Length: 203
Image 1: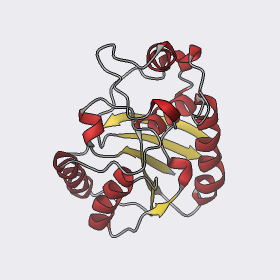
Image 2: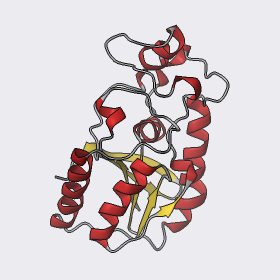
Image 3: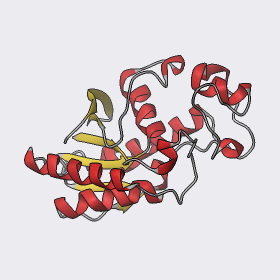
Image 4: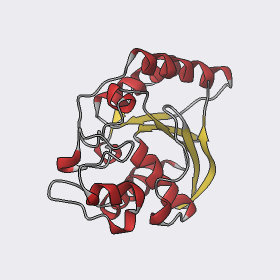
């Protein structure tokens, strides 16, 4: 079974380089809506069909999933295991051009093994556990009767999928680009996860 993990469209906080994490209410910009629509059209133009559509419940991901699902005849299935990494007290702060709130959150993005998740936040390993649970208990049982599944999520979730599928070390967690509405494509067969393609853009 193929699984497409797709990042949501652009939000204002993306444009402002603010940490979103578990902030649920940020929504797509007009540009984010257009990119989601272009992605929907690109998937259809390539003749790609999906047996199921999953989404994080956060507004930016769900809006993206609704736009894409409308063109594919699918309603999003909400799953909280697809929520973005929680950054706790750091959410809403700027992370670009060296403007980090403190050394700990700077480590999060520049030296991940040294990051210590504060109260109210999640560690990288905690996120990996819930993503693996989604793969093992939700998706793996579908492999016999689903050929392709789409899951709309967040940048941190897509990078966690890469860690699990390609054994990428935590130190390299943030390496490589993931534009809004790009997809990492994995194969899930016999409970084994492998990477087929990364950061694919369908527009």
